Image 1 (cartoon, helix red, strand yellow):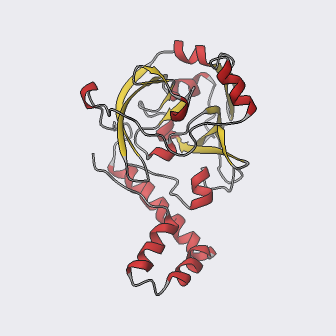
Image 2: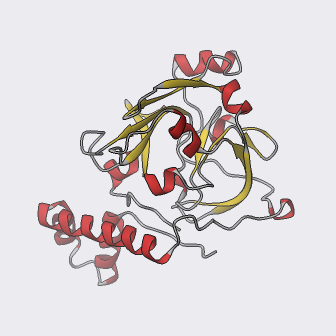
Amino acid sequence: MSNKLILPRRRFLSGMAAGAGGLMLSGCDALVQSESAASVLDQVDGLNHGLQRALSPRNALATEYSERDMSPTFRTNGNDFPKSAEYLRHMATNFADWRIPVTGMVARPFALSLDQIRHMPQRAQITRHDCVEGWSAIGKWQGPQLGPILKLAGLSDQARYIVFRCADKFGDTPYYESIDMVDAFHPQTILAWSMNGDTVPIGNGAPVRMRIERQLGYKNAKYVNGIEAVASLDTIGEGKGGYWEDVADYEWYAGI
């Protein structure tokens, strides 16, 4: 597997300008902020997404490793400790009352407890986490696959995306992420409650985080406390499909 690094679109264009001697930085910023440029960049995102889908079979697996390949340490990034009173209360009870509602375009909405998640059919996988910041780590993850959970909820044929709501915030803004149905039903997309043979540590997303193994780390939402099926991302956040996509122009589809 290549150590692929995908830069946010704004950083990519600014880097191009800097490489040309920095003469066009202000013009580059104006370009990124213009509606026409945003449209072009969105088309590039779509091409990246479409090309990845065309070149990779629907259920192609990310590389899986052996236990001897596991990293001695697994870094944390982003938020590593939600400090809300609600999260602290859950910590105090070892997340016994944690619930993940499955809502939106489903016929049978329900809420999953941590105990239920642990007693569903499980998938364990040792995979490499590739961060947009340029570092990687190999770890072992375990949890139920997302696809059967969506089927259990009676997912609508009209749903196009799955949105993950999270307990952590940047300022007053809750973190969220989203994927399409190809990744939602990918066999390696799991609700991970176990990491390296133990429960997921707080810094890595306890009690449950997503593992979406064919995408970069920021797509693997931590502290998941909601799963929502939607037809469009337009009215969620800033409409770009994720926190970092909204605030820093990260690519929505971060395939590796």
